[in-house]
Length: 163
Image: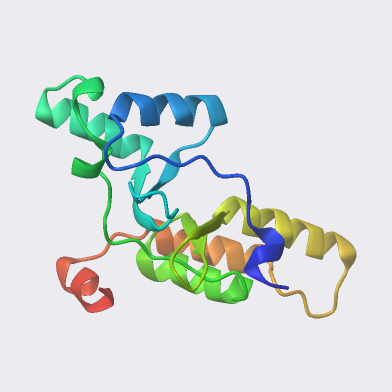
């Protein structure tokens, strides 16, 4: 099993020059909590990630209307990505190390192919559990351990060591 077998292929994106309001509208329409940010030049190359939390915090702490703030000023620029041929174990490790619930799936040129989420891994674990495989590639316990790692509080020293 590979990441490309589990990922969501139809992913909404925004650009650094889009407003936070337009990104929030996209998240509302697609019922999602984050969107990959792709380059303005149209290459579909991932340059950042934006979450609903990023939007709320930026609007609150900058005291600005989301329609006045560009995505590029708020997005996370240090984005952990994964390739389509990597394994679910690779995805779980990347999520745990980076403490993120979603990873953009990219080709060798960093162009977006899809998104794999912790929820995708959980669904795979349930399917594998139901199929009674002797050696499942994704287990419910493994997904729970990944969630625990994502949610754990790190000291500044631990965060610097994993960067």
